[in-house]
Length: 360
Image 1 (cartoon, rainbow, N blue to C red):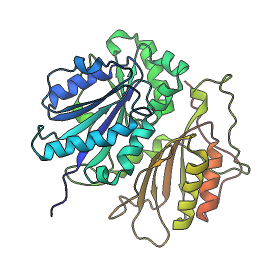
Image 2: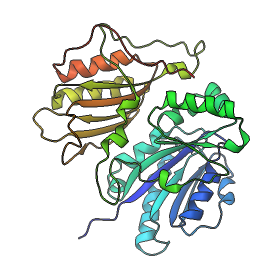
Image 3: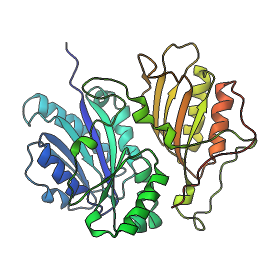
Image 4: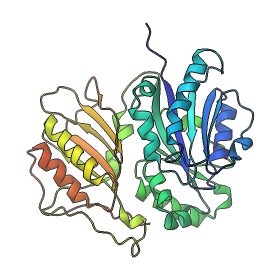
């Protein structure tokens, strides 16, 4: 029996009015064999009526936010679409796009995609694409932490309505987005039009060749390096007194010595179990003690992606490299947890943290 065909899934998110449906219209115009799962908040949905004629199927998840009220409908909807495709009841779509409401937290959606074994065998998460309004984006980041969270978890950031924004405001917003998420490329979008090849194929493997592009995926050089300090205290932020941006830290950690398997699992379990609400996103390539090839890890809040094992090291760098985007969490605390639990033998720098304050 042959293995089922695995279909890439893109999560399209972004705050209210940031142009998700306009971008989606362009996507299905260029790539019509796309299945769309659209979430609309409220009893009566209207956004799906704005979609142009499409050759792929549409599943409407109405009546609530996809990350809470209707999250239980996502898995059955994907399963039904796949089975209908196999039976020829709908066009043989080549990819799927999930469009969330503007207030959705992406993490529960990713949880469904990654932890349902049936779905994992037939769908793979290709990437998270977040739209940001070039005119109102700064105001939304100031006012709504949901907007900040959507930016932090993105693989690509689409700056929409750039034709309506002044140059100075747009440039300032781009600098702010780079501080919040250093690794996500920012693509300028006018009237929803963009090169669709820039937002698909965002996973670790290039779909055609299956060649691991670790550097392109990890981008650890874009994050400020952090080492463990003597205390490593959790940062106690006063949400009322501080801006959302000042509560977000993006940083990298490198460990020279191989990490024990048990130590690695214990460190991640501690971070996820006790600090998941602060751990917005992390990626890593890890040198596990006693194993010849590296492991690749990826997580969003409490959601840990299945570990991937590479066939070989992609380059001569054998260090374990982690990148994190966190909220209200001292980077030195994270470095200390990794170093303490992993039994790494690297000589740590003097008690200090070298990290970039993520302020606009």
